[in-house]
Amino acid sequence: MKFNTSLIILLVMLMGCNSLSQKLTNSDRIAQQNKKYSSQESVTNAPKLVVGIVVDQMRYDYLTRFYSRYGNDGFKRLVRDGFNATNNHYNFVPTYTAPGHASIYTGTTPSNHGIIGNNWYDKFIDKTIYNADDETANPVGTTSDEGKMSPARMMSSTVTDELELFTQQRAKVIGISIKDRGAILPAGHAADAAYWFRGSEEGKFITSSFYMDQLPQWVADFNDSKPAENYLKNWETLYPLESYTASGPDLNEYEGSPRGKEIPTFPYDLKGLAPKNGGYNILKSTPYGNSIIADFAIKALKNEEMGQDDVPDFLAISFSSTDYVGHQYGVNSVEIEDTYLRLDLDIARLLNALDDQVGEGNYTVFLTADHGAVNVPAYLQSQRFNAGYFDERVFVKAMDSLAAGNYGVKGLIKNVSNDQVFFDQELLKENKIDAANLQEFLAMEMRNYPGINKAFTRDAMVSGQFTTGMAALVQNGFHHQRSGDVIFVLDPGVIVYPPTGSTHGSAQSYDTHVPLLFYGYGINKGETAERTEITDIAPTISSLLHISFPNSATGNPITKVLK
Picture 1 (tube, helix red, strand yellow):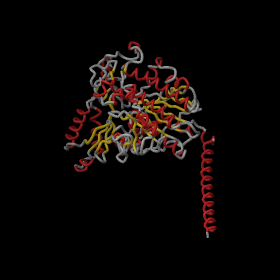
Picture 2 (spheres, one colour):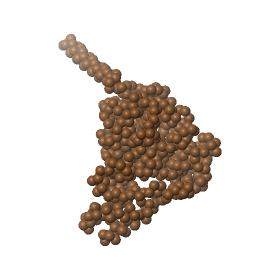
Picture 3 (cartoon, rainbow, N blue to C red):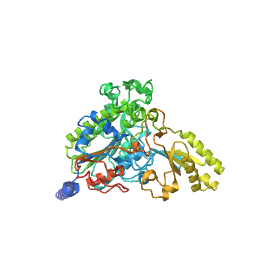
Picture 4 (cartoon, one colour):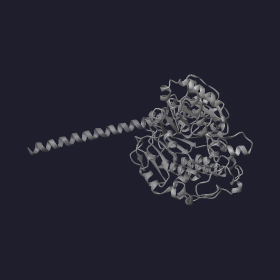
């Protein structure tokens, strides 16, 4: 009996060994298959890493205006050794951050991807919503609602999504930005991570449960090092103030001051100004917001081991502080020039890190912007340009009054936002008012209103086929479900904004014309002045990676760019 028991135990052990041996064999076989996949040159004849850089509110002429002052290793390296598309434009309005980022990565316009603004009025729930809000997501790395974000409202796939699908999620995709929308929309729906900066009293990078349940240890360590604290210092010009001749005078009447500072002139004591300007949020409106993004991106490269195998990875970076600085100080300010000179150094640091981590020639970079910006209209007026300011509140009252006078019903206009007028559809039904008739009536009145250049009806956008001119830009930005009933376009140089600082959003060339640079693996050296459009970027990168275009892409690969 003792012998039999021992024999049984021995047989069970042998069976267990055979089973373990079989598991190891299966694991080895899977590893070999993965290795074989990685070594298939026909599949992965592509860069090890793609880095997409979006510079928020970068007009094209920031590349040329400050070019002589840039160093050799940042913007100049991309221009000198890469491909420069000098006539690159947005082919839709409005030119805002969220639609811009979404269009760069989806290869299509808001008419398809649905991101029609940073915020927009949802007529179905009678509420203004934010492009990345997601009540089903939980904040990670913070308890603030700033972490309740995801790309759920974006209807189209991105080039980053298509890379994840193509590689069966073997690719690593990460989005990084000061702004949540600047990280989330480029990273797409299938990303491994998206991180954005929470200022206020925290000064750290956060994410949401859409991507993960807790921050990776390297992100926690980065936050624990209190990186934002190191940048709460004096902001002084990088070079002697008198050398900033590409800008207007430091002291002028066209700039806004941070709270607690009487005049917007250098230097800026950021530590002293922080308590009255949202704590660490003040860094967003300085070049140091870009620097902390570069710091974090370089850490991500190393700790996530990006570009270290034959499956391409994708790092999407958005430098947002240029936008905050532009809004506060304007296009012609010393502050904006200094911000770009410092960004040039941060881009050089990033490129050097890519050389060290991935190897020069193994990665591809593209750089563009989500929109441009207008010169401060008050400054333009001082130079005898036609420019000015549009009082939207007065306009809404006037249109509401005209509609009530013509139809005998008050409150027919429910909402006006993003240069779109939304009707109260229930009120129209109750009073048997024909929506098409009201559209035509208000559009006609708007065309005669001071400051308005053009007006288009919903019916024209839905049934028309516009291929050129302002109407085409408006139609490309018009989403059948999400957009309004009448869309108006302001005159050139006319904005809804305070009298200091710059803004954007129009169909004018100062907002649509942005840089587009390609550099690195698979990229020709050269330049073209032929028109390219923002929706061409994703198809170009998709072609480089040999993957499917994003599912709603309407742009075309820029063939001159690719070897």
